[in-house]
Length: 413
Ligand code: NIG
Ligand code: FE
Image (cartoon, protein in one colour):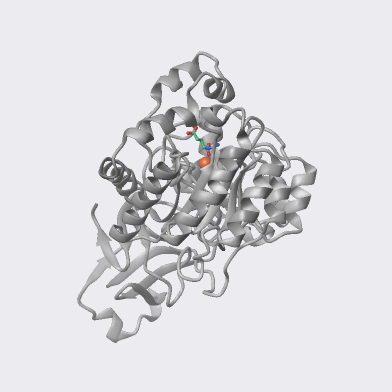
């Protein structure tokens, strides 16, 4: 497939550039008036229309992209899209002034999703998650991470992870699975938290790793959820099974989560709505990625992460949706990129790099996805005609995406 007359071919980072840190994130290389050749699943070559070789310009399958931009697909490195039911009753509670913690304490929140998960079948979960994932792909997402964490029993955690495994087998995009049994303490373990941690370590971890159901391990390290010591214990147990951490850190308070994540070689620490100088400093001296989730802040009405300080400290920042029924009922990466600009004060180039190459890095797939380079997978989207790249995040709430290409083929859903 040949795409011609492209107004701007976006995200031309060299193939061996695996992550962008700090100031590097300001640089989003773009080739104007370009062509792009795709062969089978891969990007084969590109150049400018002025010197397109004649054997290429005469190829039969062509898309003319006049006035349009070609982007690498969004890489959404933090989601919880396997869930049994929406929670819009909590939406009304939130509007009436209840906080996330108050709703959770009143039997809502994660435990509400967990009790609905117990009675859902694998088929039901697969069908509803497929609908969400298809919608995300149509909004430009071409790689995704999905967490368990609404099971909270051996059977239900395995059920969720098997659904993710089935999504991996049936969808044309890379999917990473994260084991998040340490999302909340089930109420029967309220007074014996160590017994639940033992269940995670002694029963769940051996079973899910024997079935190869997880790529990463996650803990919701937060006041009222898992303490720093408990997080450390669970991450160390995960490491014995070669599960690297991607953790929920500093969403509601500064908890020591960032530091314990880094100490356990986390690929990423995610959320960081609450960040102080020490957490920025800890990240500055590590290779851990800071994954920010501004649509969670938007929906819950909590602080927005301090992207500017993180970037100034030379940290690698990624953007992701956090799509889940409680704190972010949306999987729209275009909106996340807009919020990155509007609320996190990221420049469009920084936000786009964070949602593509750095998102891929937060799933350890940036050698193959997340930018446009010869030999990388052709997971791309073509925009509608736009005046500039900045127009995409600027026109928030509108979709600028016209055509989705996955593995070198047009995707229609
Ligand atoms: O990332 N903070 C923990 N987990 C999710 C929310 C889960 C829920 O409310 O169902 C999050 O925001
Ligand atoms: Fe999350």
